[in-house]
Length: 300
Image 1 (cartoon, rainbow, N blue to C red):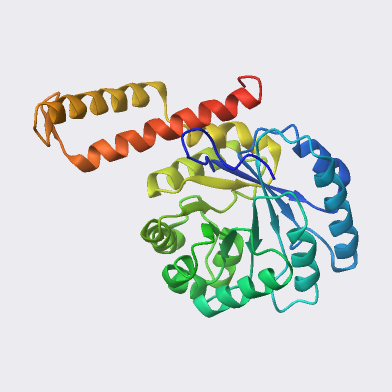
Image 2: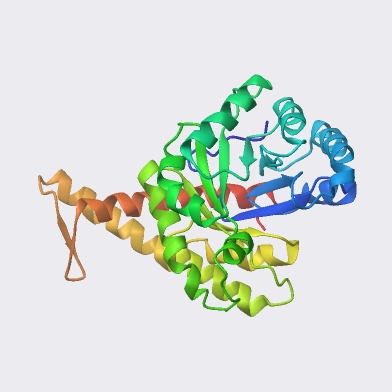
């Protein structure tokens, strides 16, 4: 299994890169890529005739090791498919950090899929849930809270837009209510939430805009479908030096106030409340965790 986190206890999920499990050179290339998380895809990226080959190829590469601290997860096929149980059985025996479950739309569905994972020998593995339909969005609070093994919600923008009959627009106006609900569901459950991928890999400006939009909505990161998107997606979800300096000043001011018996502090004419203090500490912990990730890639 890859490193389960950092010394701060935080797990950056700024970038989740999908990697086709049936293409060995892509799997081997992913060892070198500065994604926070690698999603090895047995599902949509693999043709029906190549499912068994993909499982074997993935197992071969993962057992060779050599990854550089990326969170390693496997996205399996949906429970109603003929590949689900075999996918779980293989995933349960691999050195990975989590399994991504697809096609689920209810708490009962999550619990049934977890039971299948346990039966396949994967009782030790956390799960991430794809949110890819209107019903899944509406049921996301119950799904996120279904088990303490649920560690993240991941939006599938493409599937959600199709099922909602939405046009493709840069602003994603039709998705905004759904995205907000997913963030609320994840935060209520105390877990991560990751926005879906920007599908046009030639559109750097559009991807950067979507990343900033995702960040402002409260997402922890964004799915990525090509390595070319990694640099600016990582950057969008990395606290900037001036923000880190400000958070340090907030922490210092609040800790000074507390040492003097005051629950609040003033900084630059603004009242600092305990919630601001907690948010500042969380930002600093994430910045430290991200710095540790950078060091695993030679400071890149």
